[in-house]
Image 1: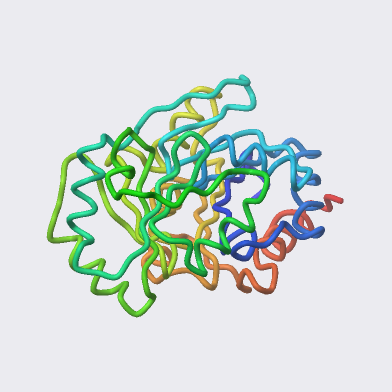
Image 2 (image 1 turned 30 degrees about the horizontal axis):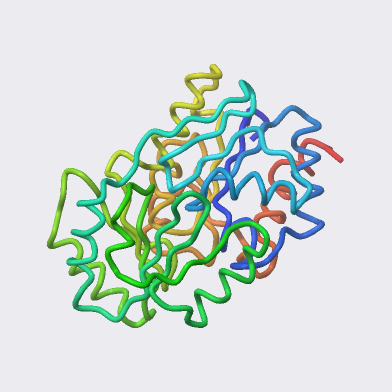
Length: 275
């Protein structure tokens, strides 16, 4: 694996446990990688603004960021940010119709503000974690969700409902958007062209990096596009079955045991005697 030039990671339940900060061990490993000229990036459903804020909070520096599950990108090599793929208001409204049979708490991130239908326990946990990073607004009318374009729309759901939701959403294919599981309790819709894989490919072309020299880490369905196109796609032990099937390697440990740091150390840092 000494040919790797870029490592890109999903955040929640891949690099860190959900709503947890990066560990000192993982932070040190990132610094060692960059010291030895391996670029490091994050790919997330969060916005680029929030990802920059997380960099500051964690005291790390990323060479690239993919936000909104592949709708926007920050290129740290060229120091530029670009937005590519949003959801149109009418598409968002259609997604609400698709999800109508299920008990959900929808959320839209627009202009640094999280719009939610109700401040339930899960929404409160997100708000607490994102303290000083974004505002949370409880809508007065459901139409607020689709009054403007947004990079995505998410629905917090019950874990036991997820299989039925995935099967139901599959009955409503659209050329404009696609729905997928991003956590066991979160189902999201994005522009059909907005994938982490598409923007990873774009970044590599812009910076003359061969995809075979990229190692990506993920744990869920929305990570599959980058796991498949990377030279080495690594799924976390705690990942979903479809993400594991799309990967070249599965970590020996899960996120709760610092599986990302363990994998990087065992397969890259130690063999190369990097410290």
